[in-house]
Amino acid sequence: MNRSLVLKLTLAFLLVSLVGVALVAIFSRVITVREFDRLVSAQAKNSFTGEVLDHYQTHGSWQGIETVFQSRTNRRPDPPSPPDGGGRKRSNDKGSREGRETPPTPPTPIPQFGLADQTGQVLLRIEPYRSGQHLSAEQLAQGGTPLEIEGQQVGTILETGQPRPPNALEEQYLARTNIALLIAAGGVAIIALVLGLALARTLTRPLRELTGATRLVAQGDLAQEVPIRSKDELGQLAVAFNRMSADLAQANHLRRQMTADIAHDLGTPLTVITGYIEAMRDGDLEPTQVRFEAMHDEAQHLKRLVLDLRTLSLADAGELSLNRESVPVQDLLERVAAAYRHQARQQNIKLDVLSAANLPHIEADPERMVQVLGNLVSNALRYTPEGGQIRLAARSEAANLWLTVQDNGSGIPPAELPHIFNRFYRVHKSRPQSNGQSGLGLAIARALVEAHGGTISVKSELGQGTIFIIKLNLRQNEKLDAV
Ligand code: ADP
Image 1 (cartoon, helix red, strand yellow):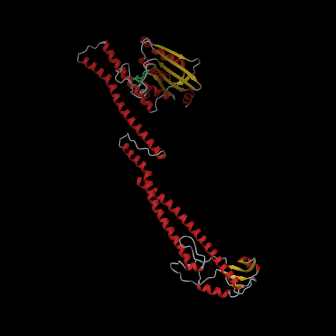
Image 2 (cartoon, rainbow, N blue to C red):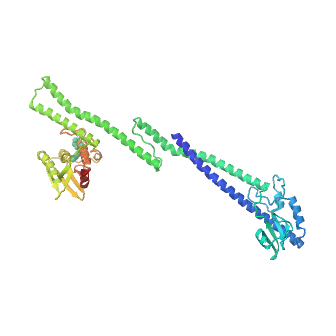
Image 3 (spheres, rainbow, N blue to C red):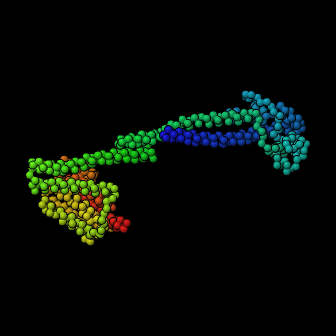
């Protein structure tokens, strides 16, 4: 395909050049022939005029002009010769003989001009007039140019008005012009071919690189980068390709990482449970209430993890079903606060609900929204030291509703902030995963908020605290509900 594109581009360049050269050749030939003919005719007429006037002035009349011109025409049939290569032409008969490389065979002379005297009688005949014929003033005015000496008309030069057939020298000149044009066209074609080939190869180079890189991606080598050689469409394509391939590599890495994380997170509680069960079965451990509680906790953790994974996979598939209903925002906040107040009190952390007056109702799945806010509050409780404060707040403006969960806890390092919504991402990976810390809490919060048509973002300062901001569009929620 690539080779054929080079071929197509080369042929296109060649075709355009050839059409251009052909047009120039045709125009220049037409113009050359016409202008050359005009020049030759004008010079022949000047020469003829000069000669007949010389004759008149020498003899004082037209007497003997027929004899002179008849003998001349027999001797030299050609009009003044054409320009020889440089475009200049000789204007008299002698000159036309000099410098000729190959003297042409004189054809039967065809007189170009005729002459009538002052009375209108034809002295030197030219078609369609006869010698001795008397021409009317009208005929003279139509087909002739008056000849004057000192303001007095002494005769009229007669012209046929018909195009004169070119003589041998003129034909030679035109043939040489044609050859020059052909050579120029050939030269241009060769240059166009070479340049076209070079240009086509240069233009298709990024495409060749992209094709190679795409093949490697298809073979599973995802992290490919092609050089960006320009800012045009091909350059933009290269930028998009590089971004796509980096994203693919990143997604692939995350997928692998996630599989490992899932295996690890499922494995740990299962190891604990099977360990207890085996020890009890073998009689190594007594089946006590405390041990059953420990096994139950681990099983609960497993259940939560599996539920979280299911929620995320449903969100990925766009199949997360929301039981939307009109919920007072204030109630949502109070429910979440009530659920965590006891734990907060135990940790000596103040948990407040701060909300603006007249908060609207929101069309949302209350259980899911409580889950989102619950994940944020439980994180805040985890990362806020004793004596700290957690604030749940809501504010609405125009069509938007903002829900925030703010704490004055440890904060998140700036480098970690872009990743904390990723699945299984934990800032302190070494920390033992107690209290259901799976690294899925924020990923689920984001999936659920997005399922409600909203967005979630975070601002944090190390040592100062963290604020999670949920933005929901009240109108969009209404619209979604209508659908
Ligand atoms: P986890 O289940 O580990 O809490 P999350 O997805 O809920 O996973 O959170 C991801 C990471 O974000 C956590 O490991 C934690 O380091 C960080 N994080 C989340 N909330 C807070 C917060 N309020 N303060 C400080 N760090 C937080």
